[in-house]
Image (tube, rainbow, N blue to C red):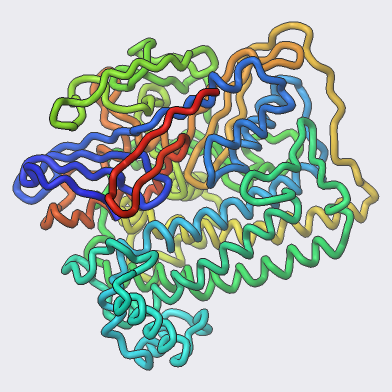
Length: 571
């Protein structure tokens, strides 16, 4: 759990790092009258992938780009490959598109399940509470939220409780180390705590199954290797019916977990945290952006994507644009540790030149100066939130039949209004709804692949020629699990001449821009109650609900001393 500065906690609070893994994010807040009055989001390590990519062979680009992250590896692999294909003016054939969709679907399901259970569930469920639970009552509760609860037997809950008691008796809580045991801000009953923590442990097994699914067509997980410019290389796996049957068998298992553990847990969370499922709780700006994902046609037009594209302004579904203009994307470095234009440049032409100016002598960020390695992306000069909640709001605004139906059913179940989705709880629920939506979409991609193969189409690759002249800046706009992802590339011959990446966490975790607009994290924290600054659960819940991820560099921590150590790697 986060390490907290105890200095001046009544006025200024530093939470660093704010995630147990995927760290490198610092949040600082001013607190007045028990509420956050101002906030600063700081990425504390430099990614540096763009300079590494420049000058490389375009056929190596995808394999290198996916090293940006240890989680969304496929997202960057696909983003780089698609951007290169845009530059070359080619599109992969139908089979390759569908295989890519299958791999991408496993990326989404894996990421969302890992995020909720490993990184977010302990913000809501108390391990200490679970130790007081009655296994019989826990089983009864599980059946209240699911007709067929996942591992919902009395004997299983007894086993889980005994395991937790063993953890505590040993003095080693394992994955629950440094949890805020017994914090009064936990609102679930002991039995609900036990059910959710039981599923926490089940999720560890489920994530392995999803990773195995990705490896069937992606060769391995993480960092799959079966994409090539123009198509895929897992041809024999695609043509082997046994591999498809294995994929489907594992998908059925994952679907069982999503529908009988994950979704019921979210219903249970909403039930116990109803007072936080209110508009404005953890939402700072109301602009939402989605590039759209999972192309449904080979020309990849935005209107034919399984996840729709669009922009919603001011939380008003009537102020909506159905397409994203890539030329309206800019990044500013007014408060970022880089040289460059303070007024914002199109990523296709901007540079990444580090200019570290440090922290204050008391190790806090320079509020009015540069304070983050994250740049500040803007769309039409406006701050945007990206991610599952943004995608769901865009889907609702497009009147997407399936997405609208699913959300309406969820809201009706909880006697809630659409506006309540503009909240920390709403953001958490949106990710679970999307996991089920992607899972169901995976069956559609399988069906389409089988139908296409039955027509005798076995093509998997599109031939291309290397361009003799330098291309214009070309972009692939895709959706990673955490949100909208753009890879911007310029190539000449076989070489990458220029490269920029605007990642989801850059949108959400951005610092202020040149006119002082707060990033999505920063704005979401303002007015949030912090009754106990020593254990700032409300801050963690809201930031974790975005699924923050800034993994991009070498960064180690000594588990005994808690001391951070950094290493410089020459490349």
